[in-house]
Image (cartoon, protein in one colour):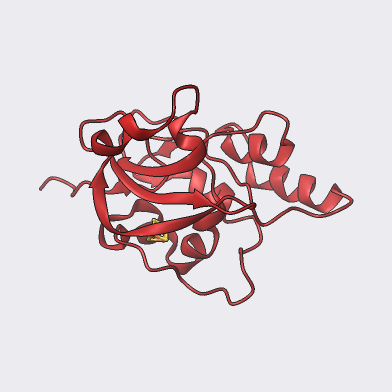
Length: 165
Ligand code: SF4
């Protein structure tokens, strides 16, 4: 029997199935989730020229076996994201249209949802933690070590995926 397709919540904007998951807003760039999925192709034309769509929007696309973050049927990116502190004080789970199909939810449940709004698909190269989280070669031990040695501790915002999917 075929395994049902799951969706990556930090996916690419340019797949035929790509959908807008949410909008990165405010000074911290946290994601505000759309109530309903919207085809990415319908909004990409509205993103001003010169702005990477993943800087302002989050996209969902199929979780594919060729992704650099895949290990078997698992996503290693959400494992690294899970090392980060949960965003927000209430630790509430956002309302999100992707949940029933989401790879991260299926793999780690609410742990992923607590961190998901802070994930940025576009990686800022000057942000060491973001770069480490986005790098498939980073182990959970290396992340723990970096966080422990960081004088200010990690920011709950800004975890990056580096364009999964
Ligand atoms: S991790 Fe949670 S909040 Fe993020 S897309 Fe998946 S179900 Fe939605």
